Image (tube, rainbow, N blue to C red):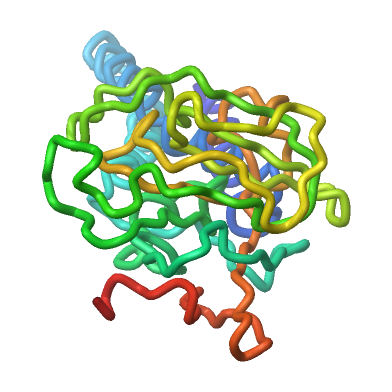
Length: 290
């Protein structure tokens, strides 16, 4: 039992060490293990430890108590999973490269519904490594609680390629869901994924409308090329465009969340400069300014 306890303690230190110091895909994988795998293992371990304590009540039970304590440590990340403890995935944009700066995927003003570095500005994304720098883009009216997709300003808006690259994956056959139901068939819904040759990284755009995507795998797109329209397919509370940048090919990851998200900025054509730390531009009006 002592050897098991030592190995468990080493495992905990290695996982958290990868998250805080190693980063990359090791950090991302460790974060997923910590949040999704350790808690159920810890619950089972606590039950086993309690049973062992009862069976060995006439013996030295120090090892069993240490084991139970380690299992409690395994369980604690469930507080992160359910945002009881709100913790941003611990990596910042200046610790990662490459970053990319893209044009607006729309030809009219839209709003950053979620985007930025903090829980308050970007709650759905910043707690996961793959979507650490992701955005959800909407247009007024939004957050209406209406069950009708057409009531939302961004629904059926045309989406244009925000960067040059090659289309590597397309899905165009999933129906929109009723807003605020979350009765989705897949996490991403319909999508277009672009490989950026200059960086070897990938730009992902999700929740598009069925039968509107005009590009195919292998197409080379330039900035401003029409791609498709905004829908409400996939895991989404209301019509919006989800967009993020990652290092790994999304077709080759075990699961969509097992990837290393990378910094993504928008180009400010009016000031010929890049966006700031809150990722706001004149093209993208922040929802707090509405």
